[in-house]
Length: 111
Length: 116
Image (cartoon, rainbow over all chains, first blue to last red; front, side, top):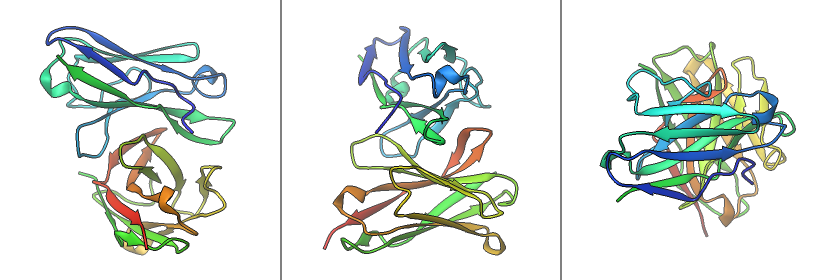
C-alpha cells in the first residue's frame, strides 16, 4: 500500500557514497510536503534520521544528508560505515489519503 | 527525555479485537499528536492513525473501518483497538510522537500475533 517508492537495496564499500531515492506524486512530495527519513537497525524500532527534508536531529552524523526536488527526495550517506547497515524508510504526508505515508524501504549493505 | 512504551497481549485470536496501550513519559501528552504504526514481519512500515489530546483522530483509510484510537490524559496514555483481526494483522506495533509531520521518538514496539 506504500505510495512512496524506494529501491529495495543499495550497497557500497566502506568510505563510499550511496544515495537512496524516494519517489512520490503530486499529492505528497510534489505538493510541497516535507520528507522525513528513518533508520531501522536490525531488531530495533525506526529512528528519525532526517526531518523537514534536509535537517538532522542532534546526534545524527553529518555523513547523512537529505534533499528534495519535485516529486522525489533523496538520502545520501557519505563515508559509508559498517554500522550504517540498516533499513531506511522515507515518510511524508499525502493530501489525497489525508494521512502519513511511508516508502517501501531500502536495505543498505556495506560490502 | 521522552519515552514511549507499548503494552498489551502478544496473541489475539482471529475475528477478535486487538488492544494496545502506549504510555508516554517525559513529555506532556497534551502538547503533541500521537500515532500508531505497524510493521508485518519482514515487511515495511504502515501508518495506522493518530490522535490529539482533545480526542481528534485521523485514520489510515485502508484500516479506518476497524480502527479506534483513544487517549487518557490522566494516565498519559493513548490506545489502539483493531477489530475483526486476521493473520494479515500480525505485526510489530509501534507508537510514536508526531512532531510537525515527523515521528519521533518511537516506542520499542510490541509483536502481536493473530492465531487460534
